[in-house]
Amino acid sequence: MAQASHSVEIPVSQDKVWSFVSKIEKWATLVPAYKEHTEIDDQTSKWTFEGNFKGLKKKVELEIKIVEFNEPSNIKFEIKGLSDNFTGGGEFKAEANDNGTMMTGTVEINAGGLSGAVLTPAIKVLLPKVTSRLTEKIARKIQA
Image (cartoon, rainbow, N blue to C red):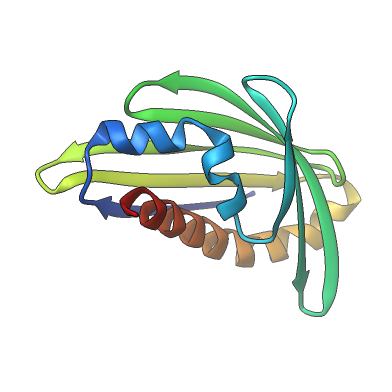
């Protein structure tokens, strides 16, 4: 299993952070290697990513399902691989402080099956970078 977390302080209200992260369509395109996504219903969407890792081009499809909304502080989601055997989850937390809001993005991925032995080392390298970039991009977009 691979897990990554990244926090950033944003000089805006907790409500403004919540208003952005609680709607997937606002931040889906900010995920590194994003290709497209389709909303299935209010809580579920299908995402497609395409990227290169050490010369290997890979297309990944997954399902994201929102499993918990705790306005204005927390949104949790589950991840299920559609193209590969993996599961996971994550969350965005928004905690008000004297300077605005501390936002933390956390993602974990568990690759299974035969491909898990191959995918896990790559996921462990890529996940911290992806989580950090996504959290920073969301912070910049909220402040814009």
